[in-house]
Length: 525
Image 1 (cartoon, rainbow, N blue to C red):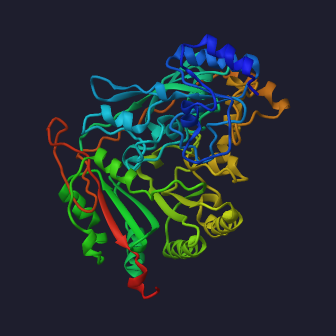
Image 2: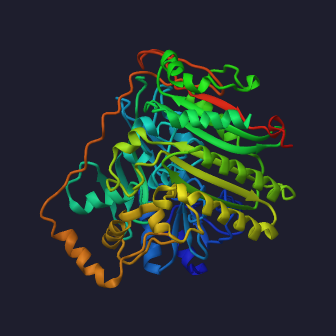
């Protein structure tokens, strides 16, 4: 617990205006994160430099005060906050810059993806979040799945360098080409081990990829989708959700990294199915505009209670699709009088994502093709048990389809998940513990579901293992993932292509095929 004297002492050490106390407006704004956890820190600190972060870490460690870190405020479980401690709000450290060659972008840890996309040329892609308000740190440290992951890998696969402040208050930079065993292991752990475990991220460098390039209907399309081998340039994401006016909708968003002719040839099997003509109009837009539109398309309203469940799957067979539809039907009945909603979505991975070994980063599920998420939001506290019972039943039905019947995605962290070490990390968790013991032996950085220290009798042997390595294994170089054509995008159907990123018309676009699953078309009400 941080006392009033502690906070006053810290305020004296830092530049004026960096410490926010309750009940000030700045404090309330800082702790009002997206998911409304009932956590009340004693203070929020807004550092503006590396020196400030080091001072805060040193102070919290010496005074034995809990310290957590906030970037974009989208932690699904609210782990960026704490009770009675100090929260570092990184939002003032929000600079992003791209190198002269346009191949690397350096991103301060307080950026949101909107800040990063604003400095990119229209023909440049960094593997970042679809929602522009999501913080870069949490996204990247937990894995980072993007519509471009099939072409370029996860966010962690594109990281070249990371700089952190350790629990000891030291500024450490780790790189892909490091040969020091300790730094190699830290670089490995940071790329997928989750934020807030090994230190406070200050900034990182990431590769920037230039511009070189009715129910039966829906279920039939699922069959078609599963019956084909799709090129890595094609990414298909999907969502099931209720629209207030149209009922239950199923939407497939098709992103293609190529020109119009190639795209139409690839998606031709899907286009043979009958689509709702009212949703097939052409509209052309840049990737940045698509991101903004997607952000604005989420259901509105701030609902008090939320829960998320994720699974990573190898396929979406017809039987599973029917189970999801049944789940959405049940959710509508459950939440009818509450004003809440449920939404199921999948993110299509594979491709370049599968080109990395299961132990090359902490993210183990490289053979997964679909990262799924069920979101349930509701208003009344009295609904909590019913909603949790509904979610638990959903988990029982879907877990058999998951890799090893347990695979989940850390970016969609579930605070109620019991087997989280296996679900998120599988056999990589023990190695994360060894890195934790080396870089944070006193467990200074901690929160629910943070990486735990190994049992005490293992710590000495772990330290010896770090120091006695006789051989070094360098990290594998980044794979060659050059794509020869520009991406094409539209909110429904549209396209644009150019041969060279030097051409001024080059833009990244995507194709979205809305596939109606409207009840009145099925005769079910």
